[in-house]
Image (cartoon, rainbow, N blue to C red; front, side, top):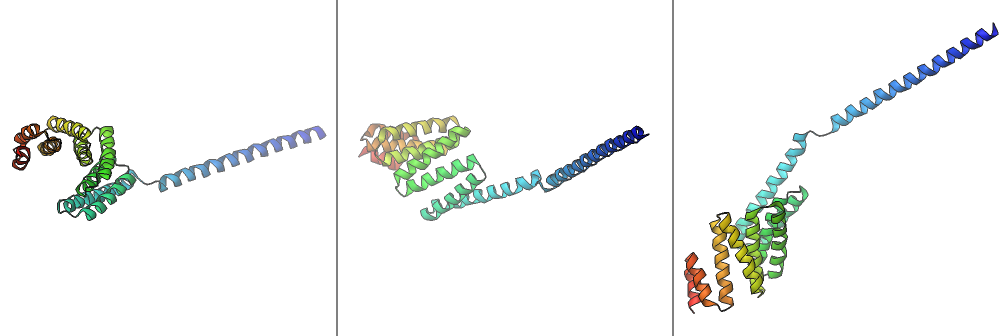
Length: 217
């Protein structure tokens, strides 16, 4: 009789332990699911993530456009500020193409200010990105500005090398504006080297009357 009572007590204990274990497991599962649902609910949707990025890119693109107009109007300091703001945004949203364009524009602005050292620095950075993302137009523009910076620093060999590369890219992608810039700058390099015949030959290719005059002196 005593043995039977003890056995029943053990069974009751085992049952209680199993029940407690099941309850704890159930509570843990429910709690975990609740946390998962909470995390899913709090996680921003793809659209919510994409929209701010698109807005920031549009803001940077607008700054780039504004800076270009300011540069055309010889408002160099204002243009520089616009391009630097655009650069910061492109880097923030990790847009490499925009970053490369902004760097190229900054380099061009420094070139306008006769700051050849800075023009070389920024156009070289732009060139690195252009090659990385395989943007041939950006590569050509960066090379042309880089070459102009070298020419301003009296490094004519490097200047000529950069402009010839830019010219090759311009013809490859059929960009007439870039081709004209590269040819004009090549002509100026030849003139600075007192290679007047070469300067004249280049001038004839672009029908640059002013450059022809320089070459004939």
